[in-house]
Image 1 (cartoon, rainbow, N blue to C red):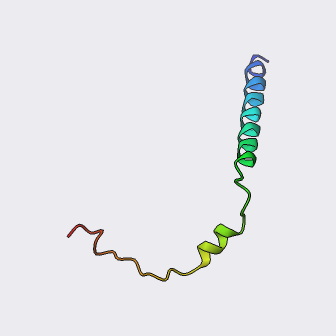
Image 2: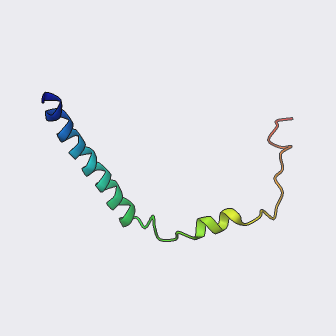
Image 3: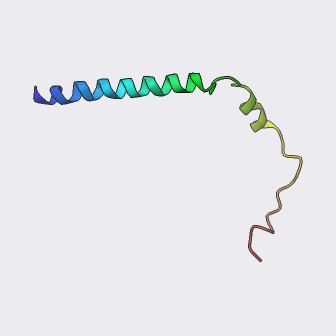
Amino acid sequence: MTAALYLIPLSLALAVFAFAGFLWTIRNNQYEDLEGDSMRMLEAEDVPLDRSSSLGS
């Protein structure tokens, strides 16, 4: 019974924190362009990567 006295307020605080995070994402337009990122991921790169400069000769 004493565990419930700790776990219930803890779970309520976690739910409030998650809901506040969700509201923050809505206010900052995180869900504005849902298809843009998925389309950019599928597009091929026109410029090949130059891996020789990253090796540090």
